[in-house]
Length: 124
Image (cartoon, rainbow, N blue to C red; front, top):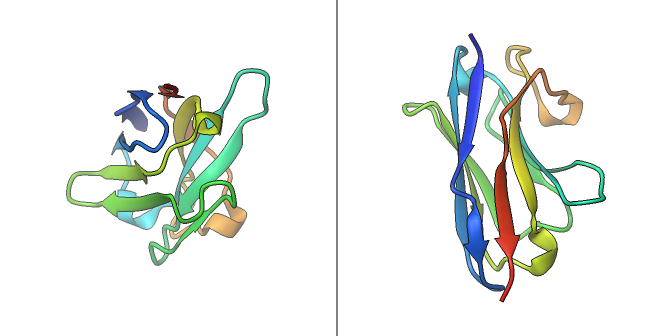
């Protein structure tokens, strides 16, 4: 069955970095779009990044552009979100999600499966 498991969250000081991983199983990662989302207390869930299932192109929310990088390691069935120059406003629970339409693109991404989330806290 489809499964997504996030890891790599934690407490980091402003300006620091974290590397989130989303381990996937039950589908062919290279052919499917994956999104990273976050939800802060009292706020709606927002998409921060997505990587396409067609050509591995990616996009980012304006709030994280230039600081976050999404990538796929198809051999390890893992999606990475590298987060640099972290700010207190990046504090949230981060989720990865999969869209199971083959060769799906980020512009039409909708989540079919979610991981359980990993907490990221940016604080001094």
